[in-house]
Amino acid sequence: MEIFSTPRWKDGWYVLPWEVIWRDLDSVGHVNNAVYFTYFEMGRTRYWLDLRGGEKALDIEFIVARAECDFVRQLSLGQRIEIATRIGEIRNSSFDFQTEVRCEDGVAAKGRVVAVHFSWHENRKRPLPDELRKRIEDFQKQEV
Image 1 (tube, rainbow, N blue to C red):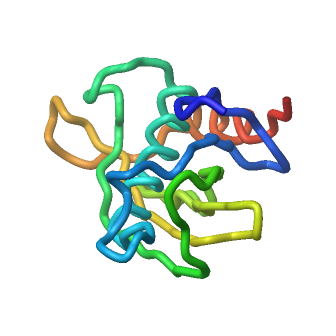
Image 2: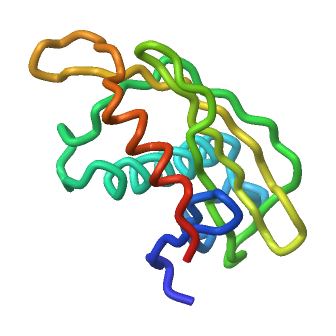
């Protein structure tokens, strides 16, 4: 498996295949707790860029307001994982990214990130337009 694999849709989740690399580990050889938040970031960034198009930092039209993680099982070097992401609840100007880091033994971590739709040019939050809500709904109906 290549470390930088192509995302796909699976059971309503946007799934990014990954492999645990050396830099992810702590001193006892397990993935460091903080790295799970990096996995969440990788998943939501790829999700958003595929949803909206673009490839630059300013193409990410949200900021993170809250991030939480439930650690379920340890991961170690070379393990193949999947970073599964979807958008859950959508509010006026914020929405929830749900993420699961999965391995062959099941779910290794579950997370939720509250994101706020944001204009970098105006430096302020903004409501999610109906067009974007519809795009998210349609995007999440994909299956490949």
